[in-house]
Image 1: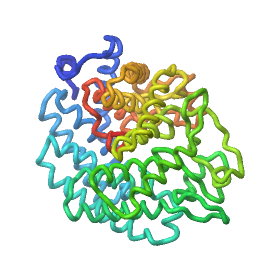
Image 2: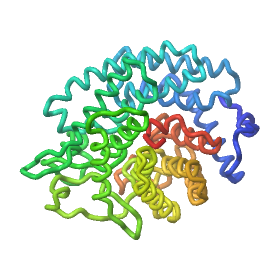
Image 3: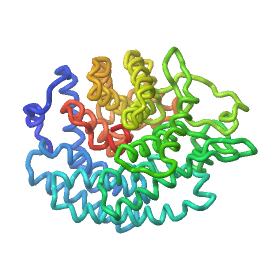
Length: 437
């Protein structure tokens, strides 16, 4: 047994805002997760190890003993080290890549300075990968792909490097990425029509998940794979004092794209997700349906980014728009959120964290109430239990039927870590990686 349940119950830093039943459910899920982790340690993959490192960092104080935590942490770090040496991670990616490892080892280094050298080594590998990646930025293929997004593209590494400081070896790639994103914001011509520079051609893998053919490309409004990523990252660069010719224009271009595309369904602000070139130019109609209220493609993620942009620039009109719309969403019944999973990416946990951050920023009770409704929904899913109704809904919405165990976006580690951060009143270490804080 890795966790000491009594330590969680006796923690004065946890202000219990949950019912006894829900709090017991959280503790049971956390203990069950760590029990499974301990028994299946030999089956962990290097990719699993990154997210495991994140959750064991946050749960350090609740381990039965410090030596147990040290032993497990060293095993996980060794798995990651071997994965890096074998090039098993997806280059610069914020999820399953070197930026992902950078974020999680940075969090560990804050409480365990003895791994600073390891962390610096990870940063050096990332910088080398970034240099190779950005070297291609002058080519046509680079400018027609989704290289700017947060999951696998440049927005994630930019936000990570901005967190590290002003050392020259960090500043140079920051400026390079900012300038690449500025260039990407320029309009371009496709089939003799002027479109946003954020237009791209989906990969073969992405095309498999699309319901319509997009031979002339797409425009993507999501926070996860679309324009929400560069809007958040460039706004953060501006907030941190970075200035470059065209930076303000690039940010304004992104905001303009979002404000042109918003539509209302039952008085709730929605965005069309990913649309084809033909839909973007008005040649084909966009079907205006209600959308999931999630981090990934949903309105809550986009509105949180617009809110942060409005506060950092500052742009009071946009920040007030985002706040007003999020208040309306917080007042919706949970059933209307169209969520069927407890996960961070497109489920209850991720939406709970956005609502929680809005509460911490504004103090408005609407966000407080919805945060704990979302937590209660997340806790109702015991580890590895999935009802027949939940399976059917998942299949209908094209989602994975089984919830992963060790994955921050789509697994139980992310759910448990997120709920812990909320009830402790401390923003999650992954919020910056998600571009929501």
